[in-house]
Length: 160
Image (cartoon, rainbow, N blue to C red; front, side, top):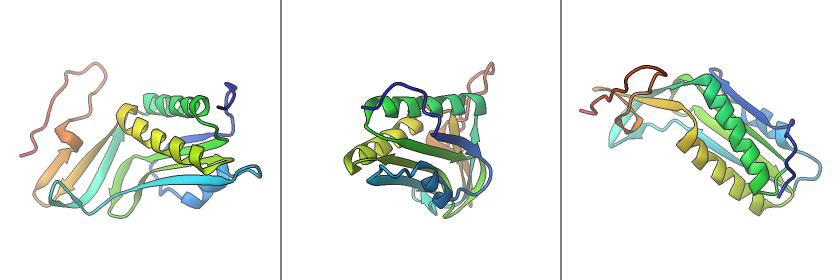
């Protein structure tokens, strides 16, 4: 396990621009690392048996960044890792574009693999970012849920 100090070399961001994996990998690489594990979540051309045209991501940005930083702190407490980089896109994304990218560096591969897997699973469960999928015959929020707006009543959109 790593120490509990703030990890100032970690990189966490939301962006509306294309994500460049090489620059994020460079942010986490150190001379003491024997492994860098990455996760590249990309937009696929189908969902729920339908052809996907494109996606749109929305997020509650201040809280999303806070939650992403918390994930980083948890990673350092749970796994023997050096650095992390986590970037999530917002806005419209086309087929094949990266929506989320995570890089984890560590002295040994097992810790890097485990931390990267834990990071994406936790991000998907806890970070307030919502995906809208666009098809030829309409659009739905992932899992049929609309993003909640702080202070507003919750609503659900039908997937029909």
